[in-house]
Image (cartoon, rainbow, N blue to C red; front, side, top):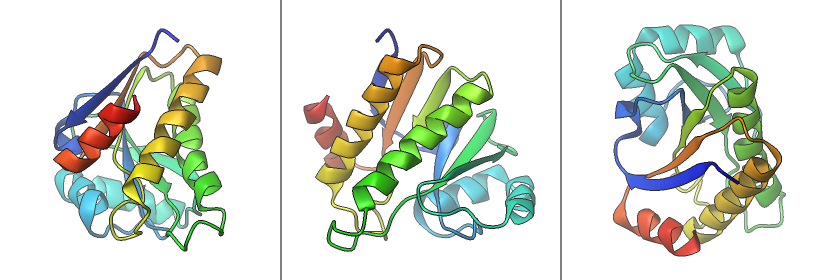
Length: 167
């Protein structure tokens, strides 16, 4: 695995990468947290494309313009709402990462940045989410050499520490 996995605590909207991943809601209509920040910083072009796409189910991923963001594109993925762990939450979260990475490969991208998907208002336990994210990304990168750099962009010191310990 020649790809680099980097853990950073930074504003994902400021990254100059091929794609940033948005932890979106099913309707792709913006919201709070990362989703709201991406829509606000990227401008109305992102929302226009999201409206054309319509719905994105949990675990799926879609791609839009990045508008005024420094990234080339935004990959929107819908993470699962935590319901105790017995509603296929882990499988859906893993699919968020796999499907986002596959979209990036399909676009010819080599750099991608992920937020901490589902750990905000969707209440996914942070450590379990980090474990799933790292395991899924590493497995994908072992099978695919098109991605050169993956960033886990942590919103806070707690998430950053969790990811660093798990790497």
